[in-house]
Image 1: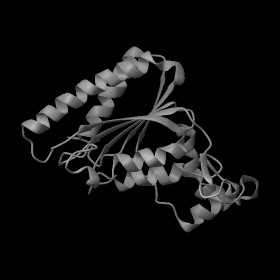
Image 2 (image 1 turned 30 degrees about the vertical axis):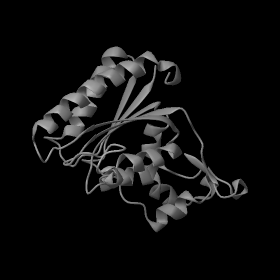
Image 3 (image 1 turned 90 degrees about the vertical axis):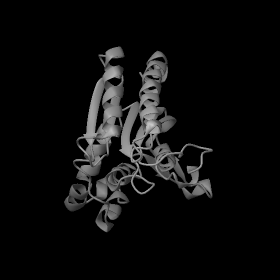
Amino acid sequence: MATVLKIDASARVTRSLSRDLTTAFTEQWLKSRPNDTLITQDVGINPPPAISEAWIAAAFTAPEQRTPHQQEVLKISDQLLEELEPASLIVIGTPMYNYGMPAALKAWIDQVIRIGRTFSFDLARGEQPIEPIGTGKTLVILSSSGEGGFELGSVQATMNHLDPHIVTASRLLGVSEHHVIRIEYQEFGDERHQKSIQSAHAALAGLVQQLTQNMGGLD
């Protein structure tokens, strides 16, 4: 059995293409793996708070030295980490807002990347003192955007600050493998958009099949 963490970040509850993708992915996944555990977190509806000076001070205080107030400050972070830590597969559904991720998703990332929980810090490592504590997780990013051409090598690739940011940060969550499927051209609503929807759902089905056939690293 594996644990799957599904995160939805769209501010839209209806008409959300990224939510359509995460729903389709997890439904197909559970058809193949009905005994797996699915944990859902909807930061689009319930965004975590931004971290604060008090949060940073609490996170960098040794657990045994934290005051009751500091423990309370980290309560949401602890709850989110309890969902993340057992997950071997993380599925993030997110729109592209202003060429990057929604603020709610960034707040989630900031809450769960924590010293002593997801990464260690040691100046003896020289110029790269930060190392992830865990490894072996798989990340699937299911995104949507109003424009197109954001994939590597395409015309607007340099403007894509969505999935490259998530992938970079996810290393400190223990992610070793990632996959990206996107729907594009939503604001155009033309044939390219329709083809993008069809291609994304076809790729999604293929990815579910690929990952469920190679479950050695996820069980």
